[in-house]
Amino acid sequence: MVVGMGAVATTLIAGVEAVRKGLAKPIGSLTQMGTIRLGKRTDGKTPLIKDFVPLASLDDVVFTGWDIFPENMYEAARHASVLDGDHLQTIRPFLESIEPMPAVFDQNYVKRLHGTHVKKGRSKCDLAQQVRSDIQAFKEKCDRVVMIWTGSTEIFLEPTPIHDTIEAFEKALTEDDPAIAPSQIYAYAALKEGIPFANGAPNLTVDLPCMIELSKQTGAPICGKDFKTGQTFMKTVLAPALKARMLGLSGWFSTNILGNRDGEVLDDPSSFKTKEESKLGVIDYILQPQLYPDLYKDIYHKVRINYYPPRGDNKEGWDNIDIFGWLGYPMQIKVDFLCRDSILAAPLALDLVLFLDMAKRSPELRNLGIQEWLSFYFKSPQVAPGLYPEHDLFIQMMKLKNTLRHIQGEELITHLGLEYYD
Ligand SMILES: NC(=O)c1ccc[n+]([C@@H]2O[C@H](COP(=O)([O-])OP(=O)(O)OC[C@H]3O[C@@H](n4cnc5c(N)ncnc54)[C@H](O)[C@@H]3O)[C@@H](O)[C@H]2O)c1
Image 1 (tube, rainbow, N blue to C red):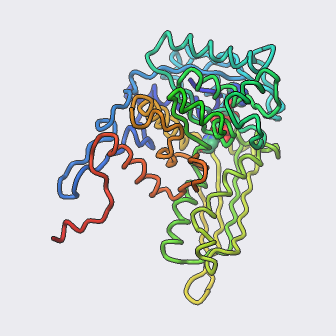
Image 2 (image 1 turned 30 degrees about the horizontal axis):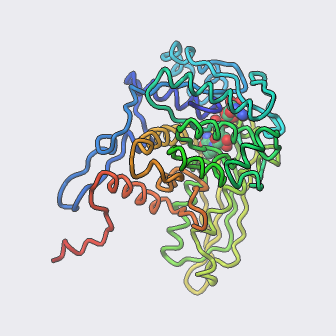
Image 3 (image 1 turned 45 degrees about the horizontal axis):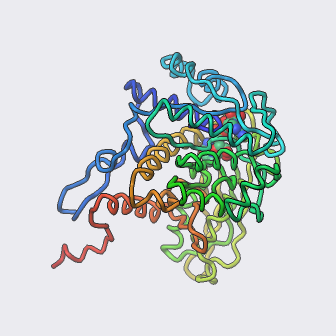
């Protein structure tokens, strides 16, 4: 169940169908293309991840969802202009068969959008009940359900006391508390129904004490926030490399131009603030200035997103990185990533859905609440209270693969490797 059926969602849904029909390969998806080493390097055991852990097959995946616009998935994909017309034409009937259900929406939380295909309710509690009814109806048609938020970035909100406990949140739902954004209503409904929830946007959504409690209570795994796709993906590769070599950093200036609907939403300062917070945290956590003041204490880090319609979904992200080396001599790195936002995000959304469905069936993962091992996919990984998140992409990948080894009873890989020299 996909909340927000725009660029990422249509690219995901069209892509899965194209792969099923043998028209394309699931490039960028770890669950579909990745392998996992088992045992020693000399053992030669490297199965595909999808053969190693019990993942649902793409052939068994069925899509539905909600959007504030009534367009079917073909029309929405045409609008998003990520995949070209020829590509979409080959799977047009399939895409036309999926129409979004009316959404829970309130323009106060996404200022740039004017939704027309929207549920009406007496209160936020009533709206949550309507989403639960949608989920129950879909459950009749399939064995297992996962919900993923690929909806717009909401305005910047901070947790309030109504988010402290499930009881306080439920009371606030009946009182239409403004601290409850639409994404929280979907998340609450999903968790009440015991279905896992992934958050692809930087909104709070499931990153709240009440949701964590509910997730544990109903055995519905959660993860978020904000798909790690373009610039932040690069940042979490480059920053660990600088730190590994003890190279200093004085400034990191990141700017983006993009022209899709996401760019339009982020043009509003209150939605941009949510995204900015998500993008800014990364460097400090990776570089640990408190441990390395000589290298990282005075970093100037700036992130800009500019709405520039001619580029559509084909974002360009520039990074200017001012570093210094031996004896403090300055150097620079320039990165110009001409990426395609939703082409990078769709495989992440697919992996998250398949892994969450697996987590729901795993006795070891089901009741953990937050699935930190899925940090690999996020700009601001959700972690247990009091923990700092791991942002380094390769630490995240090791954590993910070791979790898979762990739940399948395989030995963890530490890369110590002394045994090869005995
Ligand atoms: N594309 C990427 O690489 C990327 C990376 C990280 C995060 N994200 C985040 O993923 C989200 C989706 O991105 P996108 O490019 O697909 O944007 P998009 O604007 O194309 O799609 C979002 C969709 O959500 C719908 N929507 C908004 N509020 C809704 C609600 N309350 N209920 C149901 N539908 C709602 C909108 O109508 C729209 O169709 C955004 O929050 C974006 O910031 C995207």
